[in-house]
Amino acid sequence: MRVKIESFLREVCEKTTKNNEYPVLTSSKSGLFLQSDYFNKQVASTDNTGYKIIKKGQFTYRAMSDTGEFYPNMLECVDVGIVSPAYPVFEIFQTDIIIPEYLKYYFKSNAFQHAISSFAQGSTRTSVKFNKLKTASIDLPSKQEQTKILRLLKKAETLIACRQQELHKLDDLVKARFVEMFGNLETNEKCWIEKPLGELCEKVIRYPTFYGMDYLASGTRVIRIGNILEDGHMDIDNANYVFVYDNVNNDYPETVIELFDIVMAVRGDGSAAKRIGIIREKSLVGANISPNLIRIKAADSMMHPVYLFYYLTGEVGQKRLDAYVNKTAKKNIAAKDIVKVIVPTPPKDLQQDFADFVQQIDKSKFVVQQALDKAQLFFDSLMQQYFG
Image (cartoon, rainbow, N blue to C red; front, side, top):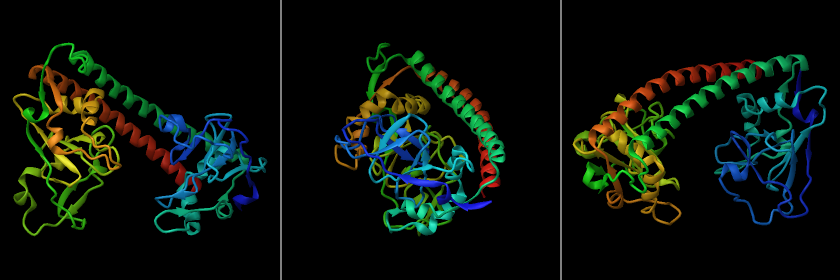
């Protein structure tokens, strides 16, 4: 049975009458969260009187989008919360034909995004109003069949969550090993010799190679901020290329990437000193860097790049980098300041022992990641099968 979702959905508009009556929520692509958890602070207006109330089992979404995609979410994390007055809030009133969780998965599907794509208004930022969204259609099997489908989807999501937890535990193991081997580096309790980063590196290079040039489908591969993943690995599938009249690697040899180079974002996304990656992928050797990145090559005699990477991405390294991030909206950091960052220098053989440990953990992470990819593929195939 194919029906419009307005046949079982209705908008509700209950508003707060006093400040901080309920916790403030934020709706995102990944779900509906307490704003204090999502941002590690409350970023809404100090006076939230007049915010919309949403109750467990009801839905809401951010009606403005920078990407053209919209993700209605069902409230599950608390019994009652509040959202911005700009967020539509709606609920199922025909519970005899649809299970709320089934609708939750439909809103995550490609079929839903396709169904509302023609409703979006605006150019730079698009919007979809609820009176348009509710005209989208959905295929509704019987509630018994919905229950079976939900059981399969939840099983796939449980597999994904388990694999993700395994990866987090392996990351935590590396961090714990780092502290065990090198101690508290803020107090330098093991009295390692400390030196400025510039004295421990062969190169700390930034070169504005590609200003004003178009990215192409082939040519010289360029590493950009978006290629740096949260764990420091590189997204090699999301490659961009440029064409330079002379060979770019001859023109700018200092910015050509080598294995175990560290790349750091120096501007561009509000957290410049937070985006750091290390080149572990042989396929990236010979690539170049965009103007928003800096290339750091550790001096082999003094510094192992794996130790340096974990130091710079750790709490102490980040704090010392932050001291040089400017206070403007762009949060830039200059190469001339990066070389001043103080780095403890444990014996090279101890650094090597840590790098060997990380290599073993990376092998385990590779196996877990493969299992995670299979679980995600299973989930995606189910979503495609049941929602199109």
